[in-house]
Length: 232
Length: 232
Image (cartoon, each protein chain N blue to C red):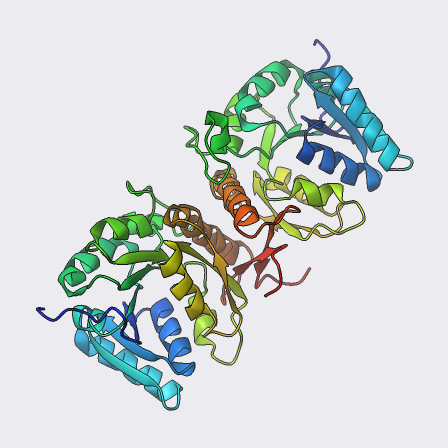
C-alpha cells in the first residue's frame, strides 16, 4: 500500500469491474484500445473478468487485480460497485490514491441498498453517491459523476452503439477528462453536467429509467438523450 | 363558488395560463382544436392571454377568467403557476373542484422560490410539487404530474415540433387521460411515468435542463428523450 498512484497514468481502472455495468465499460474501453485495469475485492474474480474481456476483444490491454492495486495503475479510477459498498470501497483504496487522480462515481443510491425497490432512491446525507465519494477521497483527488444512466446490457452488446447521453459533473478540468472518455464508446455523448451536486439529479434518473424498463418491458434498458443541444 | 366542476367537461383549464409555459400550452392545445380556458388570479390578465391565443390561432376556442371559474369549466385542470404560488392557488380553487376531475401539476420547486438559483431545487416535505398538490385537492380529484420538462419557448414557437418527451405520473386511469393530451402537440411524446412520487425525479430534471440551457447557451431550451423504448 505504500506505493502511490501515478496521477497521469494512461489507463482506466474499473473497481467493481466484475459487475454488469463495470464489465460493460471495461469491454467498451478495451475495444477502443485503452488500457483497462479491472479491480475487485477478490483479485481472482478480477482476473476472471479480465479474461472475459480478453476473450471478447482481440488485442485487449486488460488486467485484473485487487481494488487498491488497480487504483494505483490508472489516472482515472471508475467506481462501479453497488451503492452500499461505496464507502467501504473508497476507504479501502484511500491510501492508494494520489493527488491529480480522478475518481469517477457511477453509483446510484437505489433503495435496493435497504432491501426496497430499484425504482426509487434513498436519501444520502451528502446529497448523492458522488458527493459521498468526494467526502472520502484524499485532498487533491477529484471526483466526477458519470455513466449512471447507461444500460449495462447495451454496454455489453459490443456490436451496437449505446444510444445514451452521459451527464458528466464535477470540477471543470476533471469533468473534461471524463467527457473525453465517452468518445471511446460508439453512441455515448458526453454532456457538460456542471458541478458535482448535479449528480443528485442524474443518479435519480437511473431509478426512473429502471421503472421505465419494468413498465415497458425493456430487458436491454432505456437511456436518455437531451434535445436542443448544438450539434457536435 | 357553489357551482362545482363537471368532471368530464371536455375542455382544458390552464391556471397560470398567462405565464410563459402555460401560455405555450394554451397556444398548442388551442391550435389542436381543444377548448382552452385560461385562468389567472386577475381575470383581466387571463382575458388578455386568451386574446393573444385567439390572435395567434385562427378559430381558437379559448376563454379567460379567474382561476376558480376556469377550474369549473374543464375536466382537466393544469396548474402552471410558479412553485411558490402552488399551495395558495390550489387552496383558492379547492371548493370549485369536483370528484373525477384531474389536476395536472407541472410545477417545479426551483430554488428561485427562495431567491436562490433555478439550476437546483428545494426540498418539499411531501416529496415533490405534485405530491404537495395531491395533499391539497379534495377527495376524488386525481393529481397527475406532467409537462415540467417542456421548454416554454419551444411551446410558443408554433411552427416547430416540440422535441421533448413528457413523463406522466399518477394513478393509472388519470395518467392515461393526460398522456392522451400530449398527442395534441406535435413532437411531444407521452411516457408512462408510473406513480405520482416519480414527479420527484421529473421535477428535478427541469433544474438540470435549466443548467444545460445556461452552460450551452440555449435560449430556446433543451429537452429530453428516452431511448430504447418501443416505437409507437
